[in-house]
Image (cartoon, rainbow, N blue to C red):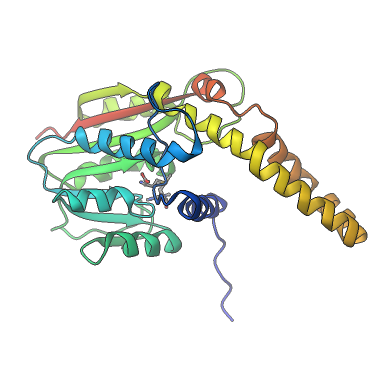
Length: 282
Ligand SMILES: C[S@@+](CC[C@H](N)C(=O)[O-])C[C@H]1O[C@@H](n2cnc3c(N)ncnc32)[C@H](O)[C@@H]1O
């Protein structure tokens, strides 16, 4: 029997988050929300904050854009919104589970190219007015991503990147992810793409980390405690073996999600969240 390919743990995290938030809040978006003082930071307001993010993103598209490639389309939330506003949209998705959710949500008009952006082979006719990376840029190999995106553009076409990067700050961030910002800037300068817009949205996105921290302390911790308590009481030997075997993983989860150190400030100290609108020069 053929061996099943390993599943990426980041993909598992995204799908688990999708199921949880979809069940409790009815949101199928996988990006951060945009927060401001008029929107209290509660998990119930997350769908509204995510909608603000999508509106911000799409609101910065230049006029005249008709065709969009949504790279790393997640569960299809942004693509669905784009289709409803009359854009023609195709997606790229390496995750079978997310692709299924995206196809169901966005419908049959949404063509998905299955695979990593780095690997997908596009036909010569596949050209777009705009190639978009909504919180997916950080997952894609840096020295490939801009060149490949540019090769898929119509003359004068645009690239939108909305994602966070690692600042050049000493020490280790408790929040993972993001290309090094300095490396990105070098790639951007070499690319010859023209920067039309460059907006720092770190302050508006960082509060999401406080929400995740709150969920860790108020939902995940009590649930884990309850499971641990029952397991220890009912299966003492198995519980000991499990705790010993997975001690490093459990310590890591404890530190990352339950230590209270995962805060908006910790995010903003180590990450910079940027919106870029770039244009191909012909
Ligand atoms: C945080 S989610 C963002 C989803 C969506 N763009 C949104 O704004 O809700 C990251 C997405 O990047 C995708 N992704 C990860 N690695 C990728 C790669 N190498 N090429 C294309 N997409 C990738 C994931 O499958 C996921 O859909």
